Length: 149
Image (cartoon, rainbow, N blue to C red; front, side, top):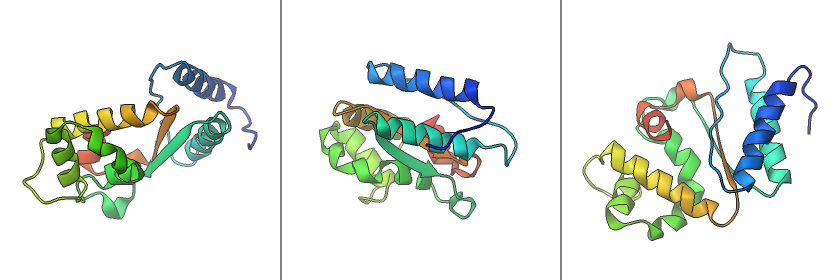
């Protein structure tokens, strides 16, 4: 892992979050600030620390050119987890499947997509701790940002 100068408090916050996750407690950590201050480096540190501790890590990166496509960011985060969706209740499977373009249907209720996402992530985290990283969240599409919030 790369040593991050002057980032003791931030590294400590990441380690605390990972320790709590290893013991079965979920949490969230938001890094914010001006461009170029090292937020992505801190996320890279968190990813490396999590992987070294046996976590599964899923990543979504907001992309300005995708910000108009509903659920694009959520698709990045959840695409490799979709084989677990079969464990979700049918309405949640359908909502998530439509949101992520896996099946046809009317635009899904965002609350139901959020519930499906939460349950999907919880199901995956039953196997081993899970860390979800979102970089450049300012470029996430609104639908993904709402679900992930």
